[in-house]
Length: 112
Image (tube, rainbow, N blue to C red; front, side, top):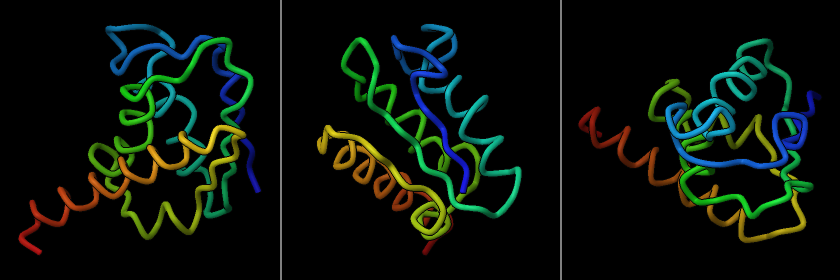
């Protein structure tokens, strides 16, 4: 099992895109989540606690929803391999919502 701690990336997650901030959801996805997922088939736990600011919805949507929209993962793959650990249950709810929305769009674009 691999472990990713958001606070090892930044204590101040901010923004959706790399152009918004070097601590954006896009940078977190590309530089932390994607390499871990591509490295091997083991499960990954992402710890979200410890940030000095609330994690914004744009950060979460780009980091996690972007795995389906931009990195070609499926919801089933991510549900099998990715676990979110946080004391803020709302983050889990939002991430689940963003993953499901991205999966529905992926399926629609494939004509399914």
